Length: 247
Figure 1 (cartoon, rainbow, N blue to C red):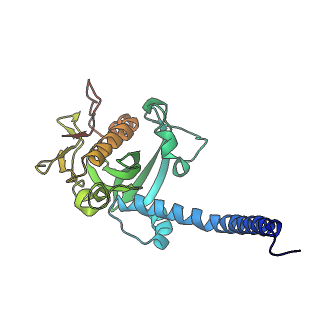
Figure 2: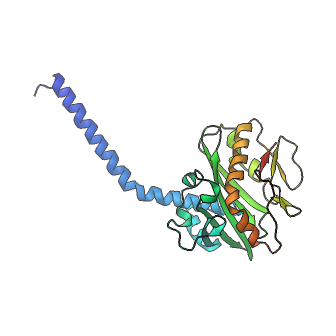
Figure 3: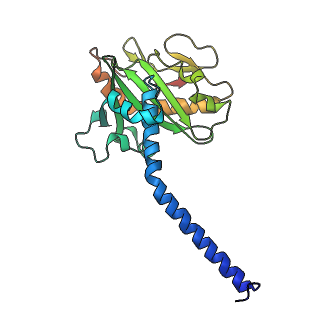
C-alpha cells in the first residue's frame, strides 16, 4: 500500500479513531466501579460534615454507619414503608423537578452524643449551574445544627463562597421557627443579627437568592414530619411560601 496516498491517510485515521475510542470505553468501564465508590464516599462525607463530623473520604464509610441510624423516604411528609428507590440512591435533581407534595425525598436520621438529628439534602440553581447541600436539624424540628453547600461552577471569591466556613459557620444555632411559627432564616446584606438571620455573600446576590430558593423549596416536603417529631406541636404558617427569605 502506498503510504503517501490519500486512501492510506484516511484508513489510518479511521483505525486510530476506532482504536482510541475502544481504549477509552474500556478504561471508562473498568474505572466506573471505583468512581461510583468514590462518589458514594464523598456523599457520606458531606452528610456527616453537616453534623460537624469531619472525616476523610476513606473514613466516611465506617463513620456513616456509626452515626446514621436510619434512612427514610418521605412522600407528603410521611415515611414510605417499602420505597422502590432507597433513600441514599434518590437523585435529588430528579426529585426537585416534581411538585413538593409528589416528591419522594430522603431523610437521614443520625445519633450523636445521645441526641437525634435529621439531615435533609437540598438542591437548587445558582448563577452558573446547580448548587446543593445538606442541612442538619435538631430533634426539636427547627433548630439548625449545621449546613454544607456545594456548587458546580459559581464564581470563585463570590458565589463560590457558599461552600466555605465564612458562610456555612453562621447556620448552627439558627432557628427556623419563632413563637410556634415557622419563620425561616433571612440572609442579610452584612447586618445579620439574632437567631433568624445570616449574612449573605458579598457580590454573590444571585447565588444567595439561589440558596434561598433551594432551601425554601427543599424544606417544604419535610415540614410536617419534622413537626411531628417535636413534643410541642408547632403549626405551619397559614400563608406560606417562604421558609427562608433573602433580603
